[in-house]
Image (tube, rainbow, N blue to C red; front, side, top):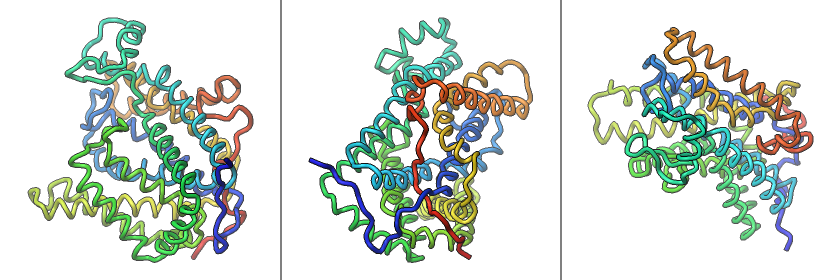
Length: 408
């Protein structure tokens, strides 16, 4: 049986050539992870290892990014999947996506991630033996280790959880497309018409994200463990599906671009409202403050995604050699960046460096490690699939408009 490809309805735009704006959104979102994860060394929130310095003033800045940075990646991934499904039949698409996600995942869990877990145990418990002993005795145990504190299940995927979730959502979506081929076009038409309306565009997803935070998060805290992580699944699967269904809806993207300043302004108001609740400046916790804070947070998540994609569509329409380079490089960067951060930060402990110098070395060292890894990997055919690269020349993931006049 031949599985379907999906053609756009007659009232949708013809197939464009590339979405350079969303390529830049993806590059920027992944790039922010380096700075965000370096920041995790210094704030009071839990991380695999911590610096001797504590910079609590970073926390409001981290909260600027935290609500929407990963959801934005799933939104862009949904768009990319939709365009890929126009180019490939369903089964070849699912095979290709599985190879480009699962091979790096397995390699990452066996090779890239173990030093993170080792350094975590060294710092938490002063593990006396070396890395090889840890790897053979504990990392490959396929069971909880070092309980009760820090009690981690090994082997682990740590920051590569994003790869797992993206693969699961893609396979689930593929199953629906195969079972009900006409459903996508129907949902595409309905959602595109609804989300082109200003009120529905701004309010409905905000309410949905607020409901997820208020109802699901207290009962299913974020774990990135796949099973039982229902708050994250609700959020990330929703934006992945929105991206998939609206990928070719030019009226939707035009509306997002036209309202970019409005969404940015509302996002600022939402953030300041949430920050006031989070910091306790509005008074002691109460049901009304909880509801207000949940709505402010959900609104901020969605409005930031709209603002970022709206400004990207308006500003980033010209192609460049840098965009082409980074589009290929950013996934290998993502795979290695957190291990580089942890290894460099651990090596600097006890050196007595001021926080600014320590952070600068960690950031510059991590970027250098990412660049060096990619430059080696892209030249060695046997290594390319291990880092999510095609064996030959990489192909564009997302078509984009052949030409576009920015909306005024």
